[in-house]
Image (cartoon, rainbow over all chains, first blue to last red; front, side, top):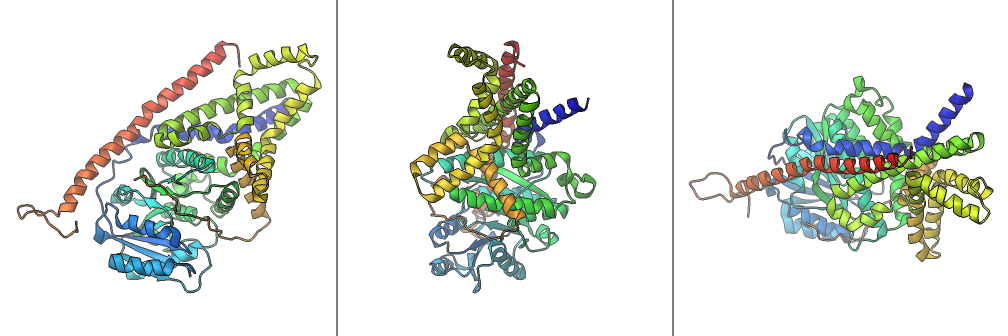
Length: 496
Length: 62
């Protein structure tokens, strides 16, 4: 009996490798019913006075277009002011802002911090203090210096503020680099799942995990209720704000039809730097809000089981991969037949969830699908796709290959077959190591032509897992919290 | 078009506000339609996955 329990635990560990995808499917199912839940029932045409806060440090290359596009929004001129908080920039930013202030009058305000370098959250807070002391605004919109709002994005967001229970609204940030390379396209596809689907699902659940840093619209009352300023002690100030607004009793909404374009990293190293910061921020949020999880009586929808499942499926992603490998490898040595069954079940489950998520993503955002369909299909990587094929069509293929191997003297029970199975068992966690080595390879500048095929081989998903794992190691070691800006070139295409 | 410009005297509503109202209604209809379209779309995808699952099951897998 204890042996049976042990085996059941090992099988459960093995199947945990598919948990991120299973939760992903759940989110897509929720996103499917988003429209049936009347997302616009409480909305109305509404133009509150919006103070746009743009934190900027040496952003001359991208800021001009951002300001021009904000000024050209389909929104009442008298109800929109842009405050650029210049964090002691040493480039052309101050000169640019002086020019823009004379061009647009009091609609563009240059706020200068003479002693900068404290990080983005301090810069935003400087702007918040100025704007709050002025008292003109009814809502603030915190954006990044490089984002491009489509003309109707803001009014599509503000319509939700007509409902006084809504405290904050975020938009759909889309990858808009032009020209876009393969990493940009992977990010573009990832955002369909992580934003367009996941945040619609969170609308249905009534709890949002994060206001996208590049488009955070917050009602004045909600901002005051959440403390009036944003958190400066973590790397995830946008997630802290999102949680605080909801814990203050307000709802947070995602508006998937308000499109904002952003330039995202285009190399593995840049992606690693950006996502490591996000993952460390998520770890900090998990610990700081530990009294929120699974306590619906205390924290409303944020404390619900569904929201916890979504949050922790991402936070524990690398642990699930390691757990799956440990379960499969242990089973391999204690019960080989069961280990083959667990292996096939895991990859069949992965296969069905992959098909559902990929097809749903391609259907949900067709312009992105046209641009990034190949990266969508290749998201798990070629090795994992091979294992998925074995999971879905394993028996006929195994039989086919067994016959072929037998013909050359390597039968189904021979050491080669076992070695292949063991290697596949280990791959789930070993793929993270491979992704880490890939990042080192790119960083070294040697054989740059090899990086792209290796990303397709190892998989973008494995890359994200490895980054999360690396972030946790840094967090546990108490590595310095540094806000490292993602370099932007201003090459965001004209999409509006 | 500045916000203070008004329509002919017979109407009191500022011009941009009227134009925006029309645009707002059209936008809202479009967005509602898009959100509602996600449901049948999701059902079709689920059906496709279910058919693949069934075909594998009938072929003796599982």
